[in-house]
Image 1 (cartoon, rainbow, N blue to C red):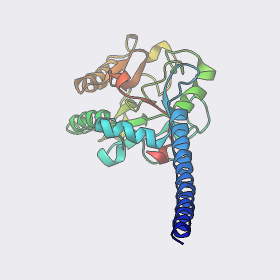
Image 2: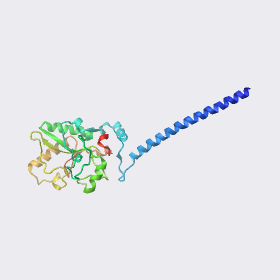
Image 3: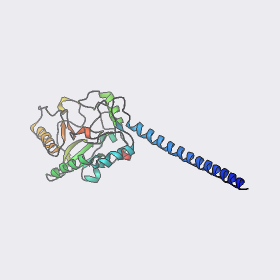
Image 4: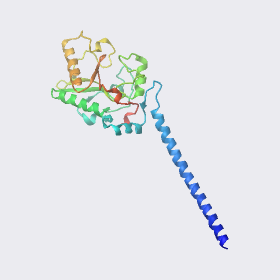
Length: 253
């Protein structure tokens, strides 16, 4: 009788251990599946592209970068500089591509550090009854790839082999507006003029135009931006490698 009780207890213990093993195995499979999915998603977004560049396409990966450095946060220009004038050329068809490259948007974005600097530019200009007018700021990397194809001249379009300051959220295309007249200051050319006339060192222009370009460059450089020598309207923060290339939709920022 005693032996029988022991056998029954032994069998019960074995059955209980089997049930535990099955439950543990099931949970282990779930954990393994979760880890596999997470690693797969992360690795897909950290793989280098065909040019050897890391381009962030995942919102989660982007959020991890700003968790370690808040200055990398992409911030709406409207939220920081509500009195800036926006004429976002690539959200319409009035651009050199003659097509809409962005969705319909009513604001654009810059990294926190770039936006803080631009806010200082705006404050100084407003004191002179002037205002910034922005044509472009953040640009998804995939749009840069598309824009390169018809141009393929890195004086006027960013080569996808290197990416753009726009893709990093630290470049802005802009001009100055006179608040009294409501008109743009004469800079000699319009936006995206791919000719020598748009270069900073082109001097065959009126004194008024040269002064206007100098005014824009002086105030932008005062607050840390650097000029692109072949486009009078393009300025960027110089520490480009600090900021990752992004290919995120505007609705994800």
